[in-house]
Image (cartoon, rainbow, N blue to C red):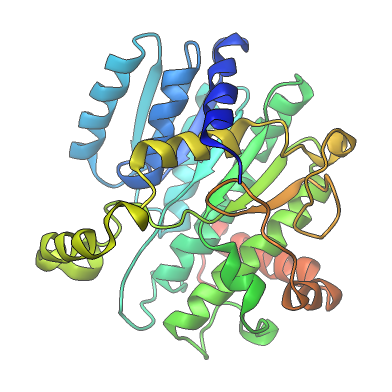
Length: 336
């Protein structure tokens, strides 16, 4: 476990970095995205922050709070429903028109539902689109700006918050049906989104060796993610869960933000090009490989036989080939 005191000591050093660090937070109008953006603004000098989400009202409140924490920060909200990849492209094009580099791409967008397969107009299940394809689209589109930051010897990092443990411990992937058109279930969505994220960041770390990639498990954190699942009963559910769980189950919001900022900036999670500077083991079982699977407390998640099997059967290449095909077809205005 990375001690919270060490997390805070590192975060405090960020003010010594050059001003104007740029961070993009996808899914930032509530929850972990907001908590981490708040700590980023608190601990950096004149940051440029992009908040991407659906709720303009909440975004307005968040921007007001962030500006009160750091008046030198530049804050931009982009209102987008990222279940449609064309909307992801619009957000990325807006960012690319304004910025020459990005230091941190932090992705937490989620869609919690008990519905069955719910296809978007692009032919993708909405839940899988938000939890996997939209995330990869952001990474793909913003890689040139991340590379520009890395070439300037500045922080260049992608953090995807989901659940790497599902892909590590559960069954294999259905390579013939990665988008789950024929074998949809909520369990399969979590398995595929988790495993494909871990495999994809391993591939990306090899092809972009000066950027580091993290797939992080958040643990229990009180966020707004249950809104869509429980609707008008959400307040009752949160009260019951809070009473049953108490502080021992939930990571406090502030601590969650601090720990995720650490994940997004700490040198110990080094890119592949600087792998010799760290003893931390990457997602492929190799020290300093540039892609890392983190527990909520900053520890590396232990490699498993299931994860090894996914790599041995060419999972990294097979998943990324599928992902590129989906992204290509949707970018051309078609359905997958």
